[in-house]
Amino acid sequence: MTKSKNKIKNELIMRTTQEVLDHHLGAFNEGMESILSDYDENSCVISQQGIFKGMTEIKGFFTAFVEGMPEGMMDVFKVTGQQVDGEVAYITWEALPWFPLGTDTFVIRDGKILYQTFAAHAAD
Image (cartoon, rainbow, N blue to C red; front, side):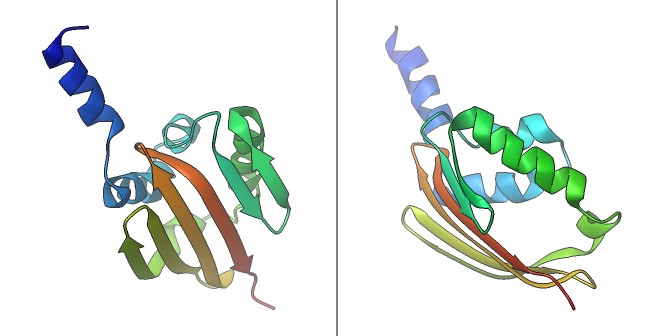
């Protein structure tokens, strides 16, 4: 591979933690392919429902999540807090009236989400 192709490849792979987080948050409006583009076979999502490793399991997790979302949830989804430090990003969010509190922590390495934890508190 030539030097310029290597540089382009490295720039595509080496998105910053903030860039990956920003993309991930917007990906829900773009569809499953966009959501999954932030993960790879080494990725792991940890949630109340269990641990999901690799693309097949992560796709299953997000398919169930998206299909189970109340109609209009993404219209009211709001990030209420965000912290980024090195490879780690942490967000709190709400989607009222259904979810007064949600939280995700991401470990992002080489332009992909390596680990994500997810929890959401449903309204009573």
